[in-house]
Image 1: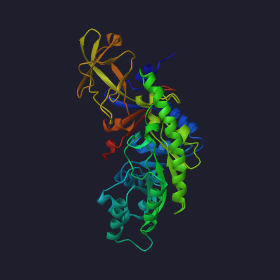
Image 2 (image 1 turned 45 degrees about the horizontal axis):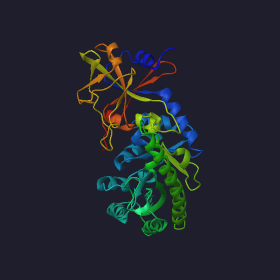
Image 3 (image 1 turned 135 degrees about the vertical axis):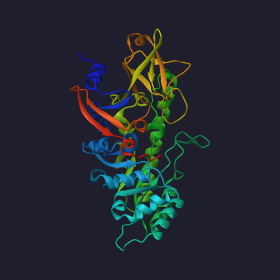
Image 4 (image 1 turned 45 degrees about the vertical axis):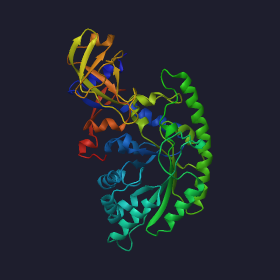
Length: 406
């Protein structure tokens, strides 16, 4: 039987490393598993985890996917204008203070109908309204749609113990209702939805390697957090719907689809990382994705027995500076970083028994810690199908189209 490494090598033999690759067979399998765990809820694709317009388009063509969750307003405007397949429903996941981008949005009726802005403060509302009032809009211009972002952190002992991300200051049904009333009091705006992303569940694996006791504690915390949030999210949704109708209530992420998708208050989910299955998402007990996004680095030195040096490789992921942020050597199995050097900007020594079988010019296949951040390092994603072992062409990343939004 042909191994995955042999298939990757055969399909990309004409390419010069370093390069990034997406295994379409694994990508499709991961997409199907995400929808299976979503309990029939449509999944909004998180663009920051994909960062390729072509792969976003292919995902939206699959059953169970609808809409995009963008990460900046300039990105959302670009997607809305550049590709009719991506322009119908774009939710910007984070609030914006980008006045030029707001001015662009309010002057473009088509974009205003496609894009929903995130808010969690009346200051956000005031920025948007100021942009509307400064623009020369026609009488038939649509209102600017907004979504309320809700704090999902678990605080079992009050604000002195916070488990979860620092995001929105809106936490209670009363606070959400007050912000909803502030929206509807501004005729320039339309209340479109509510979002509550439970990062402490969706983005934190419950089976950290080598830490069984911590894993048990983490699972207890996540279970109790999910119970508390389900009740609070339902109450917040009722409070907001009492003020105005909602088109959607968004929740979840790759690691929590199977629980959030059961909540009656939630009408849609969001996910993206699970399509590529970066190595941080191996730390979940409830699902197991297939590595779909890899990058290949060439061996350029053999400095000692059992050691090879590859070109580049220092592509750390965002988040706390810990041992899980660098990429991991994937194939051939049995490689690890040098304790003294780690992953370097221009060269990376790798040690292990597998290094003895590598020659100068051979490749080491790596997996990034997170999903879309890999695309900020490469302008092209080469597509292969590991089921057929064939090369399926290439697509540009955002960077390959000359776009960097952060």
